Amino acid sequence: MSKQLFELMREQEIQTSNFLPTKKEILKSSENFAKKLLESGEVNPVEIVAQSKRLKDAFTTIHDTFLASIPHEKQNAYGIEIVPSNGRKMVQYLEDPIWCELQEAVKQREKLLNLAQTQETADLYGNLVPKVSVKYASDSLTIKY
Image 1 (cartoon, rainbow, N blue to C red):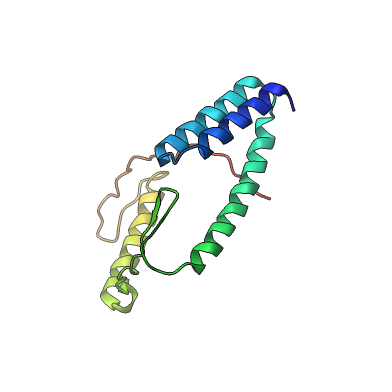
Image 2 (image 1 turned 30 degrees about the vertical axis):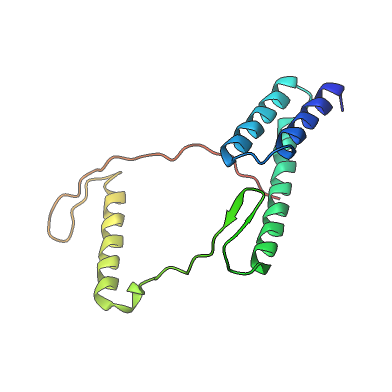
């Protein structure tokens, strides 16, 4: 590891340990740290992504385990507020046969709309099914191990 890389890592460590930064400050500092590492050219971005994914998963497991062990009461630590909340009310729509019928009708309509993308299609009532616009999700990279 070069001296410059070591100094960048030490600077990041100091920035996050001397004071209680806000979430926004932590995110900005981390982004700047990553950009400096990229600009230095001394790290392989693929290796950093792979290692950071492993660390992220490890810290998520640690976080979830400790979170499950703390009492459900309002607490503060290191500028972080932990506030309990009650589970939300979830109506069980599947228990209503009319709702289920409507859901099935929506699924059937979606199939017709998908078919209309490639060929002219009519529904059960003889109405021409329109060719609706298509929107694409952004490109991404999948990480597996």
